[in-house]
Amino acid sequence: MTTAHLETRLIADRFRPVLTGLANGAVALADRIRRGGVDAGPPPPDQAADGLFATALQDADLRWMTSSRQPQIRAMQAEGTLALALDPLDGAAGLETNAPVGTIFAIFPAEDTPEASFLRPARQMLAAGYVLYGPRCCLVLSFGKGTQIYGLDPESQRFMLVRDGVTLPAASPEFAIDASDYRHWSRPVRAYIDDCLAGTEGPRAHDFNMRWIGALAAEAHRILTRGGIFLDPANGRPGAERGRLRMLHQAAPVAFLIEQAGGRATDGALPVLDAPITALDARSPLIFGSADKVDRVASYHDLPEAEVSALFGHRGLFRA
Image 1 (tube, rainbow, N blue to C red):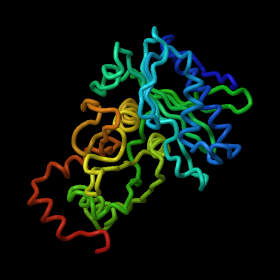
Image 2 (cartoon, rainbow, N blue to C red; image 1 turned 90 degrees about the vertical axis):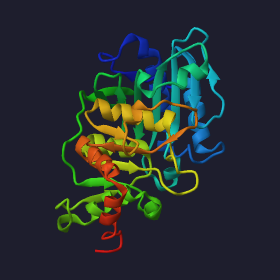
Image 3 (tube, rainbow, N blue to C red; image 1 turned 45 degrees about the horizontal axis):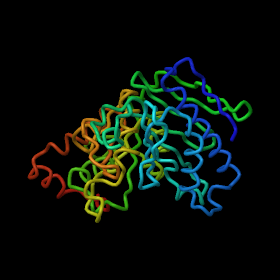
Image 4 (cartoon, rainbow, N blue to C red; image 1 turned 60 degrees about the vertical axis):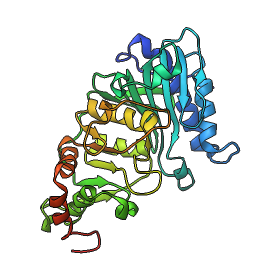
């Protein structure tokens, strides 16, 4: 496997082995994606990506590692000081259409048991990040002191710092949501989206654009770059009543990055990072983006049901 390099002036020594391993895995995966080898299978793309990272992280000071693609926690190095939660190939279904895909990760202090390492308050996370495999391969990181963006130089195989102290743009006319779930959303979410769709004629008095990529890392990167809001709320579909995104492997690390960039990340009302991680496969709603927009969604949830019902009676996705 090619050895990758990560510009290190912002990297604390304790994180260097695991980040080097993640960088190595990301470079190998980016190469496989570029050559079309990940989705050619077998194994399936997510399992192939999981294997690449497992190999790259063998000597990364990890005591425990959990992957969203494997049911069992891996015991790594007995003296390891860190625990890693990894979603190796977020948005894998987009490979066949050449859409952006990503790798999302969260780093915790290692405890004596895997359960104690991962099933804990989300705010005890030490670091989080994602790799986005798009027109340019990018690595986005936070160690709890701001968010940084690195870009991969394909010639030197080095992730070079592109932006330090990333701050979400304050204003953006974009929102991202899977509109096919409209009939399953709660009344507050429908009311919020209806107000956006009403444009200049509605209470927001502004025209909005709707986006949806279907890969969380790509959605997060757009919002870190351009602002706006992403909504994946709980809905009435079977299995989505408590949200669809994995709390440990997806929602919590993205929330960490967004908060460190000055944004908000909630479950619709409460900060995602204020919730405990109760199971490896626990799910969570996730609404994140520019602080004012996320706060506005929360305000819709704070309205009395009668008031939301009165507002909602005059709105609808297919009505003026």
